[in-house]
Image (tube, rainbow, N blue to C red):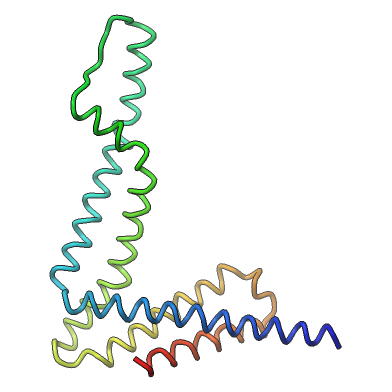
Amino acid sequence: MEKNASGRTHHLRAFVTGGAVSVVLSLLFYSGILITYHYIPLSLLLMAALIIICSLLFFINIRYDHMLDLNEVFSKTISFDMRTGTGFTRFFLRFLRPLNPYVGALTAVMVLLLVLWGVPALIIYLSAGPGSFGTLLKISVFFINMGICISYLFSDRDAFPCVVDRTMFIAGALCGAALIINVI
């Protein structure tokens, strides 16, 4: 009897997890796509500019980081009198080196936001026009939300070992998405 109650609790936990993930994603995507839609030229240009700037900083740091290390080793071992340049570029690259993981992460986040917010907002803008975008916005939020919830389900199979848990997770995700879309 205890085993059955534990199984029910686990199934309920899968349903609640699906609902919670779906509610958070729905709110995030709805507000993000809505803001991107209302400020479509500025938001898309800002995201693209941040992606380009971060990518260039990441590339410059990766490209010249090795050269700075070689130059430093060369100046310390072979020619003791040689002084390498102490210009702004060297200072800038030394300052940028510790920030490199954060710049890479910011680039990845901006690319994801451009794909998940910018592309649906642009499709809605081009297909529906400025007047009637509410239904298409809700449909796009629902499909993006369910796609991410299903990919989360497949990526974390250990958390949902049996078919009932997976079904409960998907049911929770559907209920959470439907709740938020109807409330908004």
